[in-house]
Image 1 (cartoon, rainbow, N blue to C red):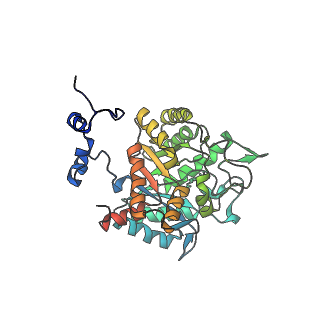
Image 2 (cartoon, rainbow, N blue to C red):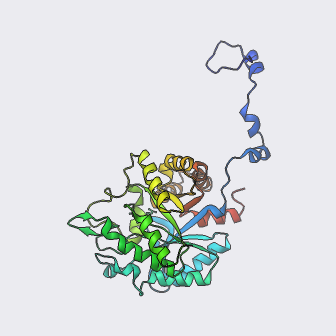
Image 3 (cartoon, rainbow, N blue to C red):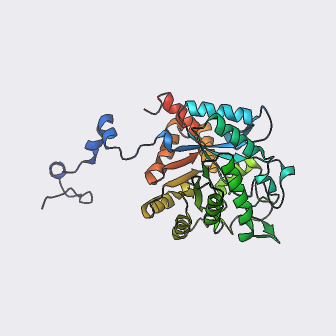
Length: 347
Ligand code: PBG
């Protein structure tokens, strides 16, 4: 048997050590050409999904305080932002509406109303840019006067009673040209109900990206600032998952897969890389990772303080999602990453 170099053995004289050290992983790191040859993971622009916040109105491009560089756009400005993003090579967008308080009610009726600006804008967007992949959000919270993802009765978040509203919302979104529906409320039986409603209306080719393992996380704070969608009372712990749980994610994934989901999402992404890896190992469906607002805000803040090298730290973060097993990455960094790629900063 070959004698191997043992780090722990301090008694081997240096000359012998060198002679017996047959394995030198550093050889494959010697030059950029070799490193590039043996690189296991490559992030591609086609993996990125750029989240956009929308408001009703005209000429509005309103920066979100806790998300520097991210804005709420009215339709005209949104079309510009999408055009710029497309020119940089991005194709996929996930869209969220910031709804005026006066339009919110207990049953989220505005979510599927004919007057809904979110639906109107999506329809416009799809007509102008048919080659985009547009992903929606299906949950009550942007439209609910209670700020919860489901119907609230006596302080309880109802499960089954919310299904009808979500089905209507999904069909209304499919009607205006959404490519992939994103049910994000983490309650039970969502995927099957929405799949059946879509199929009944002949939208069998509209996909579903399920928020499969979405945790009750503190890292959604800036997103709730962006939409003004924080719960009016209580928290989301009776529907979103306990951050302590890993195996429960498998149960959620089994259900979503059996109910007809096309993607399994893990959210947040950076703090839950183990879950991304686990679902990738156990399921054949593509995995989506949502690099959430708080994760974006953390890195931006550190960069603004000069504490991290943004141009290096940001791509490293995005790469980690791909390495863990995600092929679809929802990230507020998408456009800046695409710009850096164009500027040759990632070479
Ligand atoms: C709501 C929804 C949330 C996010 C996406 N969809 C917030 C929440 O569950 O309260 C968070 C995204 C982010 O933080 O970037 N259904």
